[in-house]
Every structure is written in structure tokens, then in C-alpha cells.
Length: 295
Image (cartoon, rainbow, N blue to C red; front, side, top):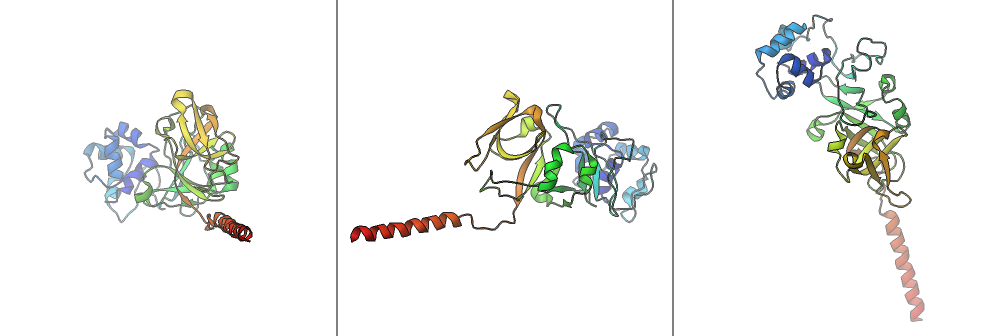
């Protein structure tokens, strides 16, 4: 049995794992393990729920055919999708991005624990195996992110990349391109940060880690000190201290927070070259000075 069909069924029902658990009477942990193939026994109550929801259980078990949902047409295309959060407009397809040959629209609800200004991702992506991909946001697109954060059309034309899940694990990721030199030498201008969405920033943000903070005014890539619970703010610090003093950002100015977990860099310049060159010049000047003294 292809257990990815269970995830596909949940997406078609527009349910989160917690919601499906509540409706089916199966624990969220069991649903997660079933979708990941870690649990092979399917309780009869869960099968009954799927049958009552309109799924053909024969097509669930037959790996040679597509999953049939009696409330819709047969699912003919592999799911490499822009997934819309159902809270955008669950009853209308007018707001959905245009579908490509290998895409169909399905929904996944994500919740976030924080101030009311904070927004959960409106679009995520999954491949044909049900694994999420990362939306790639370059410098130009990043400039418009705060103003289009809940606009599905903004995301519909952005490229995506698959991530090795044995390295990155579960979660919703973006790959965002950085601008400026405030985080040098750790992060250089035009580097890409692979970053995971934080659905509970108040609890999960760790001091001194690098985060991508989407604020109402723009994108911030900094190391942070988490003062959200105590004072309702983040202290943002740069790695490049020259001309980049620490500053704070209030919680009500924050839209989203992502934890940077890796980077892609096409800058292979020798960062030590300038320092080495300066040391060479100093050594030469010292030798010249020594010769002068000895005369």
C-alpha cells in the first residue's frame, strides 16, 4: 500500500492532522505515522471514516491505480502543488494560482501561536510523494513579501526546490535570498537561506540563532535574543558589528518568523584574502623600517 495516499486523502478533505484525528477518532500521532509509513496497521474506525468521507477503499490499497474520491473526479495527476490555506477562501477557486500540468490545488491548515498580527504560511508545496518543497524567494521577490504575505498570486510564479528530509526534517520551509553585508562573514550578500517556519516563536526561538523575520516594514536576517514572552519584542544583532548596532522589533510588527537552518552560497571568494594582503604589506613595511634603522 502507498501510504502517501492517506496524506493525499487528508489534503483533499482540507484537514490538518489534528482535525482529521478529531473527526476520525484516531490519534494525531497515529495519523502522522501512517502517512509516513511508520505504522502499517490501519484501524477499522479510520477506514470507516475514509469510506464515509467518500473515498474508494479499493483504490486506497491498489498501488496501480489513482485514489478515487467519490465527491470529486479521479485524481489523475501527481501532486506537485501550491497548497492554499483554506482560510483564504475555502469555497472559491477564483483566488487559486494557475495550475501547471503537474499541479492540482489542495489545502493544509497551519496554526501559529503568537500575536494576532502573525500570519501562518498561506501556500506550501508538496511533491508526488507528499513531501513539502521550499518556495524560493529571491531579493526582488523578498522586497514584496511583507505586502503580499497572504496573496496566493504572489507565490504562484515563484520557483520551488526539494529538500533532503533526512537532513531538514518536517516543517514548512522557504529558501530566501539575502541582501547586504550586515551578517558577514557568516552570510554574504545574495546567499540563500533555507529556513523553517516557526509556528510557536514565543516558545521556540533560541537566543543567538539566525532567524528570518518578516516584519511589516521588510525582511530582517539577524541573530536574535528572544524577549517575546517577557517584553513582547526581539533583540536583533548583526554578525558584522561595523555600522550595524543591535535594535529591537516589537511583536506586533512581526508577520512571520523562520529559523535559518542552512545556506546556499555561490560566493567562493577568499574571505581571508584582504586580511592576508594587509598582513603582507605590514610585514614588508616592517622590513623596510628595520633596514632603515640598521643603516
